[in-house]
Every structure is written in structure tokens, then in C-alpha cells.
Amino acid sequence: MAAALPLGEERDHARNILKSVFGFDTFRPGQEEIVESILAGRDALAIMPTGAGKSLCYQLPALAGDKLTIVVSPLIALMDNQVAQLKSVGAAVGSIHSGRNREASVADWRAAAAGELRLLYMSPERLMTPRMLSALKGVDLARVIVDEAHCVSQWGHDFRPDYMALGELRSHFPDIQIAAFTATADGRTRKEIADRLLVPGADVFIHDLSRPNIEIAIEEKSRGKERLIALMDEHRGQQGIVYALSRKNTEDIAEALAAEGFRVAAYHAGLAPEIRNERLNAFLTEPDLTIVATVAFGMGIDKPDIRFVFHHDIPASVEGYYQEIGRAGRDGAPARAVMLYSPSDIARRMRMISRDDASGNDGGPARAEVRRLDELVTLCESISCRRQALLAHFGQEAAPCGNCDNCRQPPEMIDASADAQLVFEAVADSGAIFGASHIVDILRGADTEKIRQNNHDALPAYGRGEHQPAPFWRRLIRQMTADKLLVADPVYGGLSPGDRARVFHHGGAYEMRKPPAKKASRKDRRQAAAKAVAPADQALLAALKERRLGLARERGVPAYVVFSDRTLIDMAGKKPLDEAAFGDVFGVGAAKKEAFAAAFIAVIRDHCDRGGAAE
Image 1 (cartoon, rainbow, N blue to C red):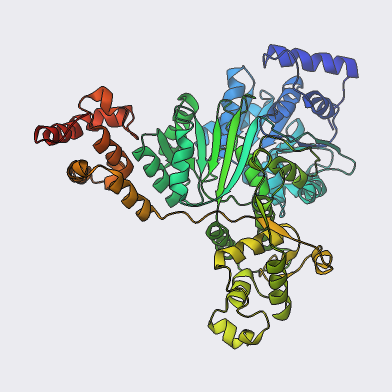
Image 2: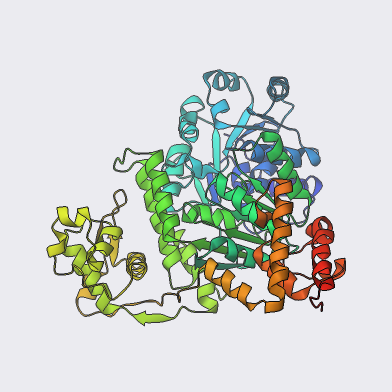
């Protein structure tokens, strides 16, 4: 292992590099202890929140020594970002990965083998080839750093099979020092990282994961795109990230936001590399561009002034959610995280899990993914402090934060004791093996093939829940599951009584979050908005819609990409006759004003000339 300097000299050396190379006068909280552990040659596991400066904790020791440090990283973009930053401060660093041409990778390897580099970034699949492992035995190697180490764990939220092979490093290099870093790992994942990679008794550093400057809210989704537009309206001119579940969703959402005048770009793995790079560079350099992305975007993006992270769809796990919202507010200034979720999102996630791994083997990756999704749904349904529940997942205690939706506006509760008892009866009488959808069908008295095949229309609970709509029962079952009154089988989803069920059966009362009032449909609201237009302006609204359709056809885009109905209704009411007034219409930004003002003002002038009044 790496030789340790005398403690005082070691600290002085580290602090000199901190100032002379990185330009910092002091370490951030918790960094110095990790740096000292690595400089002393000890194996270490560091769990640090995003934005806490974990990269410096292994970069500084590498620059302080005279041997090579290998850094294993899962993403090309992450490696390239860190290499560029290190080169900008004069560090001797290189990289080897599939995104570089062979000549560049060979040049960096030769420099590393000659002792000219202090850091060499590599993907796990490149590091663990027999040829590379053999070549490294002839190099003066100080240590291997495993970044994003949660990828090594089957129970982690971002398991990568290539990372599993890193467990063989010790057999090839018995005396090598290994240090593992991640921002997201619960107790089970931490144990697996340590067991696979580190020697017994390795140093473990678990930092306070709280990010109090981020305001957290989780909402049940209703008309997701419209809610997202409203959220974006509150942050016009600011920069953020919108996460969506699929590539198609990112494109659709970006198109809808662009139609409302926001500067947005979609980002996902299906785009050509040059397009992804172009959009990433724009995001890093422009102050008001929002990226609409799948989880392919964000790891390793260290941009301090991201003001919001919105999830249009439910993420995959609590760990993924924590990591994604942690990209906001790294400068310490107020930031905002809002997640929209719905039962259909949850069902879609379950289908994705089943499609990716249909084996269903006990303890396998599919079961782990179902468990993680269940933990996230529990967070969504929680009626207590969001931050408290989030940190509890990682084994940390905290007082109520006062900066989440449940703290700011505690949910209104209703007595659901009798209805919860009905759910228990339906679960127990049907054998405690069926999922939520079937239990709801029993309660509602549905006539389905599954009900008939199992004779469940003869159960005492059959049809006794007709007094409540199906969404009520689904909501109640989700909250009962979140409160551990019910447990869902991690593979098949069958419901059975949970740890707290016995207390309830002995006379305990149960309250649930009051369901939201039924909202009008988009069609109903559009019709109501159109009726609100003065009768004299109905003709103008019709003319504006006709002009919009013509412009959309010319451009080969849907009509709403030109302007939404809401914008045209506002335009018909305000009747702007110059560009300044046109810019005051809802949903008209600078780009749309320049592109469309003349065309629509002409329609309004014509309407006014024929007798329609202008304000």
C-alpha cells in the first residue's frame, strides 16, 4: 500500500496542493479526514452528498504522490468532464475509454506507464481486461479509486455488471489500496461495496446527506404537462433539469415547453453523440437553458447554479431521486425539487422491470428493483416531513425540515378506519396473494374473469366498497402499504398484512390523506375558457386559430407548437396591435414574438377594421 508521510508533513503537503492547484484556502467539511485516510494508504468508503466535493478527496492525494492513481468511472461524459477540469489546473491526467480514438488512448497509456501521469481515468470494462491487468503489473501503481461505487451492488439503484468484475482487483493486486466513493448508498448497498472491494476494517465516512437549501415537494400527477408548464412559469429565466421516464416523453415535453416560450432541449441516449455534446455544452454555458432528459443526463454535471429539478414521471428509486434532485442548488442558494407521480407511472415502472428481467429469481436484480420502487412509493405517500423520510432511508436522523410540502402545508386527513378494515377483509379472505388491482375489483364488485375463476364474488367483502370510486381504494391501499399496514410481495405484488396490521386489528383508528377534488378535464376547461371570451371576440378567436393552423402546416408542426389555445384566448381578449403589446400576451416569449407577431397582429387589425373593438 502507499507509504504514509508523518501526519504533520502530510497535512501541510495536502493543504499546499489544495491552494496551489485547486485554489482553495480550506477544505470543505469532511474532506480533510478522507484525504488523510487515502494518503495514509488505508482502504476507504466515502458516502458524500452531491456537491460536497468528493472528487477532490481522491484527486488531491493522487497529485500529492509520485505514483499512478487509476480512477474507475461509469460514464464517458463524467470522465471527460473531470479530465478537462484537472487539465485546466495543470494536473497530469489522462483517460482511456471507448469514446476516444485509439491514438489518444495509447498516448495516455504510454504517459502513464512512463510515470508521467498521476491520474488515469478508465471505464471498468477497459480496466478489467486481461491485457490491461497484466500491463498494470509493470506500472508503479498507488491505488484504484472506484467512483459511483453503488454501481457495484446488485442492491444498488444503478447496478452495472461491469462493476461487479472490480471485485477481482484484489486477487490481481493483493497489496493495492482501494477507495470507493458514492453519493447514494443505503446500508445494504454500503455493505456489498465494502465486501466486494475493500479489506476488512476499511475506513468508512458517511457524511450528512441533508441539502436544506432544496425545497422538496411531491405531488400526485394530474395533467402533468400543464402542471409542469405552471412550475416552469414560476422559474422563467432560470436554469433547471426536467426528468422524464422515456426518450419519447423527453421529446414530447420539450416540444410542449418550447411552445410556451421556454428555452429547452431534449437529451437522451437515442440522440447522436454530437447532438448530445452540443446540448450538454449549451447547458453548461448558457444561463437559462433547461434540459428535458432521461437519467442519461446529469451524472458528473457539476454546475452550481441549477435552480430547479422537476420530475414529470416517477424515478426508479429513492437513491436515484436523491441523486437527481442533488444536482440543484450546489451553490448553496435556494433551489426547488418537485416530483409528479401517478399510479400509471408506478405500473409503467413495474412493466419495465418485468421486461428487463423476467426471471423473478429470489434475491435477483428484478426483486431488488421492485423493492426500490416500493421504497420510493412509500416516500411519495408519506404524510410526514419529506426530508426526514428521505434521510431515514440512508440511516440518518433529522428533525422536520420546514422546507417541504408536508412541513409547509400538512396534508388534510380523513378518518378511513372502516374502509381500511374492508381492505384487510378483502386481502385476508382472498388468501393474501393478490395485488392491489384485484383487491379493488373485489371491493367494487367488479365482474371480471379473475373474480369468477376464483369465486371471489362469493367473498363477504365483495361489492361492499361500491360507496367509494376505484381511485379512492387504490390511494388507500398505497398509503396503507406506505404505513406498513400492508406489504406487497417484491416480485409478484401480492398484498398481505404488514407489521402494524395487528395493532390496527385491536381497535386502532386509521387516517388517510384526503383525496384531491376531481378536476375538470382539459376539454372542459378549454370549453369554459373559450366561453369566457366575449361573444364579439369569438370571431377573432376563430380567425386566430385558422391563422395558427396555416402557420403550423407551413412549418410541418402541430398547431400547439405555434401557440396554445390559452395563448390565443388571451390574444383575442387583449387584441395587441403592436409588438410591445403582443409580448404581453400569455405564452409569448421573445422568439415567438419575433416569429409570429406580424402574422397575428395582421389578423387582429383586420378584425378591428371590420368593426371589432381593440383595447
